[in-house]
Image 1 (cartoon, rainbow, N blue to C red):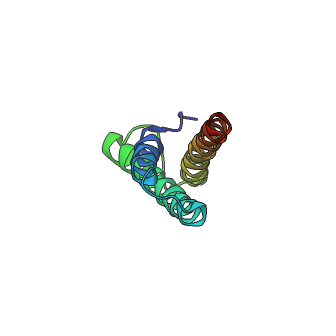
Image 2: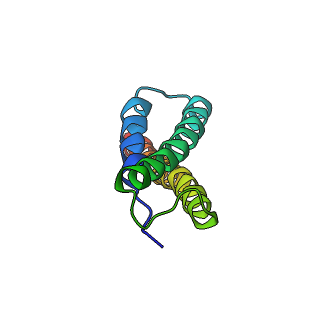
Image 3: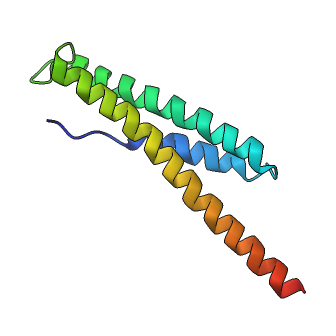
Length: 104
């Protein structure tokens, strides 16, 4: 089984985090993160399909193993973006709390 690429979800994560800094409302940021994660999942599955189409080698996307590969790449794209978002949100919350303690 070929490896699942994660370059597309990382690019989507970078764009998400770059645009997230301007939003102060956590609910808007969370909805934006979910939308970006779903988009990254579908883009990652499309990227795997495109790679298999261009290579036209031993990866058969039309078969059962190809569907499993596309589904797992979609799921991994979703999980990568959510994981990056949660880790950054935790760091931002921790630093804001530390800054508030220093001001008092």
